[in-house]
Image (cartoon, rainbow, N blue to C red; front, side, top):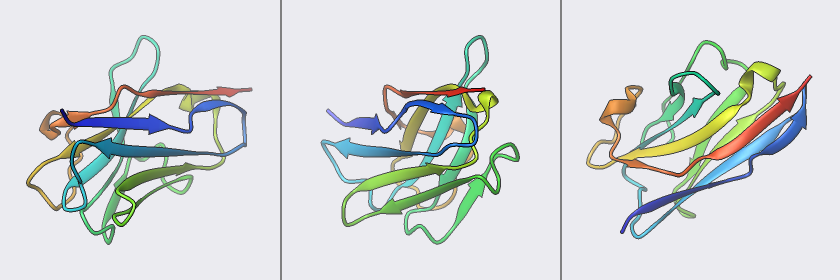
Amino acid sequence: QVQLVESGGGLVQAGGSLRLSCTPSGRTFSTSAMGWFRQAPGKEREFVAAINWSGSSTDYADSVKGRFTISRDNAKNTLYLQMNSLKPEDTAVYFCAAKRGWRGIVVDQKSYDYWGQGTQVTVSS
């Protein structure tokens, strides 16, 4: 069974940084589109960032542009989200996702096939 496992979440003060990681088990996603999404309490899950299979193309939500960086290391089969200048409004559960059979950028969460369980990020003011 394919699973995506996120790690790296935690509690950080506003202005701080965290790096999230996502590692699949059960198969490799080195040729798949991947992305990060988040869900804050009482809100719908929303797009954060996406990356194509090679890492050469990325896309970001306006709310995180210039602060977050999505990247991947296909040799390690790992997806990353570097989060800098964190704000209290970034507090959410962060999920990674993968879409099989597609190498481009995917921002629509309904298009993704595999999801992780999420990792909590809490930013204190």
